[in-house]
Image 1 (cartoon, helix red, strand yellow):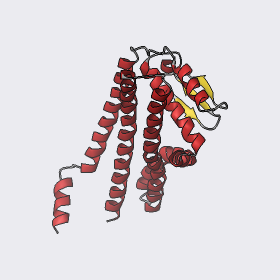
Image 2: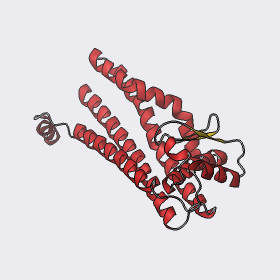
Image 3: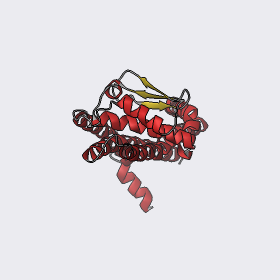
Length: 238
């Protein structure tokens, strides 16, 4: 009786605590995104003492590790940097490829960290790569299936939608160790190879840490959204 009373109190005024939490998570995602852009812009103004551009730093890291079958490519956009394991390319954005700032060098090294993960068979990366197709389906089809199931009052379809959406959430969660590990590898290589040093390493660490927080916020938001969908479906059945 106490639980039912509490539920009526919570929802009697149209207040859904989980929905409020989803909104808070969304705000945190926006804050994290704004912060990474702010931190990157700050350290994009500081030239690395080595004078290496992001592309040159990436090539040097790959050379030092004896990796000759990965190309360093220039892609359009701002902070669209990524490593593509399918065609073995480190793709650096406009802000990174030709810039010799400590921010650009740090981001380029981070992408090389993913190359080393691929090279050494880092298990979380293998898992993330394996679930990419399913995660893409989950992010595009999960919510529409749930909405359609609710519209049709067809519970099995809602359940399927939740399971499909959970694949996208799983991708977000497994991304966390992949990104944190790539940053650790990057900072260690930048220091060991003398590409950056002293305060420059600290600056790059701040850039990469700010970027990592966007992944944390996104994963937390996805998990909360999944929890809310599960609770709503359970409440609907009751």
